[in-house]
Image (cartoon, rainbow, N blue to C red; front, side, top):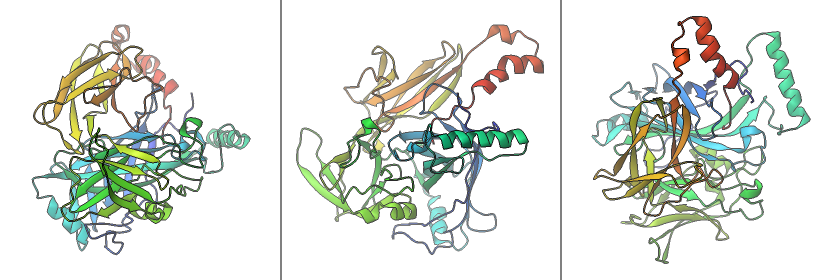
Length: 469
């Protein structure tokens, strides 16, 4: 079992991260005083269990955008960051452990729980601060995507290469010689900070989801043969425009993180099946999603809509210039409010699940099915949403174990969702982590030797097992 952090601190700080631009409805602005403000974050990346690669968490205390005394957004943690939508086909050229993957992270900072916005002369922050007075606004949401993970400060390394082994041995020698050595795994990131509106999920994207089809890209190996794939795209219709979040979607063509040329992407809308009518919505040329555009806008693409055009009740999709469909809208999605839920053995609780229909809370009467990820049989339980579009499932800590739970909204769930068929770009899920009750250990005197020998030593032996960027 590998250890990605030799000092065992799990420390995961942002480095050289800053505000690249703002948009308050008039397009990208790089002149606002808030632009270039540093983003400060230090968390603990916890991925210390061998059950899967979809459950990393970033524990932290606070996060800031800007500096004290200047233009600044400061937030005290309400809940940790959880990873979602892991795309293991984001950068096949970077075949060094988690280097192939990209992943999204999200959390929210409530306006009545330690959020502070110091606007000064920033029009962007003045606008944001004014919106905090709206009843429909809960605070700010922060979402970012990490990608292009590099190990040992060498982007040329690959799994199994002699140079990789040499780099690992060199780091071991540095550690043996004493002194602090930095985390050998480092990623790039892009992200957004914006309004957290009532009805939006705090821990993962609840916008309209155009889920990945995992379609092969012309001229590239298919994803089944470790080729690239377009990830899930998120969309929002507001203020007369369609906004697409491509931050975790367009795969990289090389280790330098240049984006693959998919030609001019075509956004269309259709009536739900069995209708076949297709309406053209927009075209997105390479210059709006290539590496330069991606880094400038964090993958956000704004598309003006025709006057009165709403796209309500229509299914969106994105295709390449050759007609290959890369992402199609999943109209109904069921999202658990707690992506990682901890429970003591023998205890019981419940998880709330919110159902969204094309990015908005669904009403009553939607069937939601919860099943166990990887179960060999069709083990499941179903419930129906109330008027607020929510359901609640009881959970029981019958024994110490970690169980992946998948949620599907609608009348025809896929059962069982096997490990081979599970795709984190499509399915919504959570992990139930039941802490085992060991009565023999519980009866021992609470001495350091007993605590370390029977509890902490186990964590030292198994943690952390890094599987995602």
